[in-house]
Image 1 (cartoon, rainbow, N blue to C red):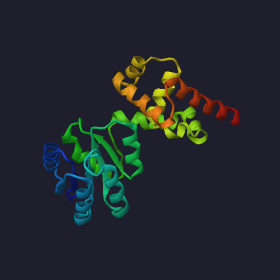
Image 2: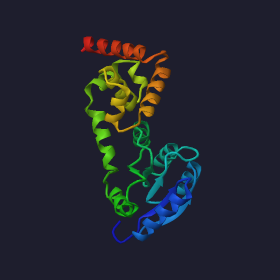
Image 3: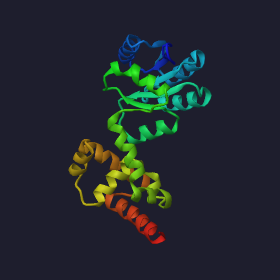
Length: 222
């Protein structure tokens, strides 16, 4: 890629954000081939221009993760990088499973984007530092990995939902869990509500008993 500008397609339904990103990229020597505002736009423009990088928002019409998957499959020479506000574990891991080579947060300095994307084309991963530990925790959590392998109940939960329930099971309050995860108590309650719905139980005590039963079963099998 030496001597050649990085060619990009940008897709984000926030026009102001697109403009800010485009300006930063062009100032850094990159070439923005086209811009879109939806997943459908992203896929169509990527197939038309065959850029080096497709820079995609997640929560845009049509779902950016779906666009990432389609682009990764049909254009293997185009690196897909997500640029998003979402720090949710589900979005992060779904994006990586869809073939994204990077996951960047919109709060970062846009002036760093050009060099970050050049790094992607050199084979480097592009990941906001705050999210690297999330990935490490996902692969370092032996208790959760056992549940994922052997407990049908735990298999229904996302990484963050499991983390919340595990802390509640240890006796932490909703406020304590929120502080440890750097989220609001409301976010913790939303995760718990989602868990109850997924497990089809009425309260968190029932959910914890169900998950605990899976853990005990896994421990005996080991």
